[in-house]
Image (cartoon, rainbow, N blue to C red):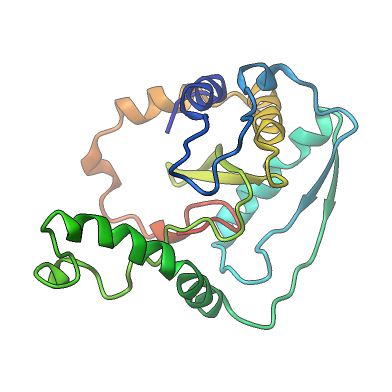
Length: 214
């Protein structure tokens, strides 16, 4: 969404705010611009290579593995944790879709009152798996930060914080960026012909960090 963590923090400062139409809006939203200068020394970070559910390309896993020591260099303690779920990722996604369906129905009723029946006249315009892969499963703040590349294709490493602790995610993301700058990656992408990427054998669906939601 932005090219720097600082810009992401500035964007959040503009976007955050109370809206009485949103039942999840916070009465007193935080400010974020100062978070990118915070130290993460002494903080504890748990690392899960795959959340116990998601398949990760071994080359992508290697990039992330090499990126993790940067947080230790910044003074944080990183511990690997093993997670196990009784249900696979698809089953968890189906459950979440069922839970949020009342909100979807409410959102569809507004256009219908204005004469736009999305489930009637425009039913064929909606995919069968209705917006399956874009909900935030837990409400935790998250960021995807550049960790490296595989065969010239970018790998994102996902940072997830506690609920309402968006500033912690920004602080950790910024700390990583100071130790492992990624700005030169934009220049490499701009100089590369799109045709040069044709025929690569990397599965783009797996070119993101562990635990990313697609």
